[in-house]
Image (cartoon, rainbow, N blue to C red; front, side, top):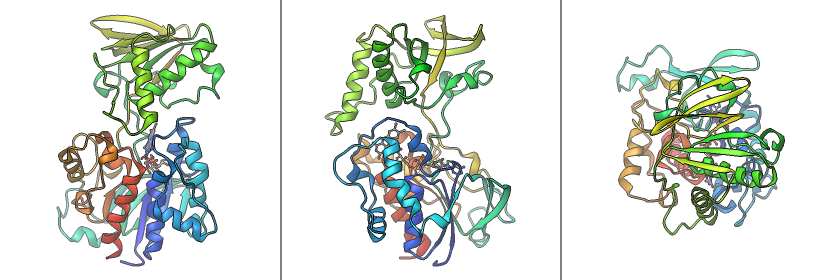
Length: 396
Ligand SMILES: Cc1cc2nc3c(=O)[nH]c(=O)nc-3n(C[C@H](O)[C@H](O)[C@H](O)COP(=O)(O)OP(=O)(O)OC[C@H]3O[C@@H](n4cnc5c(N)ncnc54)[C@H](O)[C@@H]3O)c2cc1C
């Protein structure tokens, strides 16, 4: 309905595109962003280049809105880094005069509920839609409650990394040593002195861990004494390779990971089939128990854990959300994704609004949080989902 208040959680690519879509349709968006700047997650990847070129990363809505303001959105086949995506696309969108007043930076959404109803009341009835959402938010002035007629959860997964213990639960000692564990992909060139000459445990085997391993091998070539133990859970990792990969950067990364596995760098010791069984501290260093058949102690200066992430579902604990048991995304979407048989995210599509519907009316999970490990990893899908839900929120 025009004039409806739409709370958007997260000012990443999906949240900002959703704000533009709401404004185009006469809805009133408020975008809550926990960081002090928009696009906090993509900025966090540092130097990592996207696999997809500009033309796949800019939504039509963003292009239109920027053009109307006399700005040109980036185009072409260049591959931006995360910060370039933020600087050249997402910041300009966030600065648009119609978007900027809707942004609440430095404001985290802590919980979402319905006025006067808990999770187990009015199960699947229309009554829930008659009550506004209540959002507990925390900003520079402290906590407050704000209301909305619809909520779009575009919070992504990046801020909720998995633990590094076997099975994704914390290894004994991990929580106590959290301050010693780096869980984001560092820009090693900018942090040279923090990594050069150190002994490092790297945990994980996805594209982020592969990128870190490749970068650390390059760093070690220039910084004698740098030693990396790379703990890879699988005995036979496929490195998430895609057959006949149309994205050359991604296939090059996989090839580099395979070369490292084959012993390409004397500084990187790849331990296949290894799990972390415990961490403790001794004389300023971290002692890690690695299990690979036997338990072995490895003493390191630094621990880098890149073991994936999963969406935070505590946010909507009091709502009626039928979530996927594997991803925290909407169950219907996960079923559609699994059933589609697509081998790669590039072959995927948004699957329409019915795949996004939840028992809780007017609450939608969009963007990377909606598909998690089903590996869409594409901004384009988030933009398509925004189109899908606009039909419900604003009418056809
Ligand atoms: C290393 C890497 C490489 C990638 N390469 C590509 C690629 O080549 N092409 C591609 O299309 N995609 C790529 N992706 C995926 C891409 O990052 C996502 O598709 C995209 O960022 C999804 O945007 P989003 O808005 O859904 O989530 P995010 O970008 O994660 O944004 C979520 C925002 O919500 C904020 N937030 C979180 N919780 C709260 C809260 N409770 N309250 C308020 N704010 C909150 C966060 O601070 C963040 O700003 C890559 C991802 C990674 C990690």
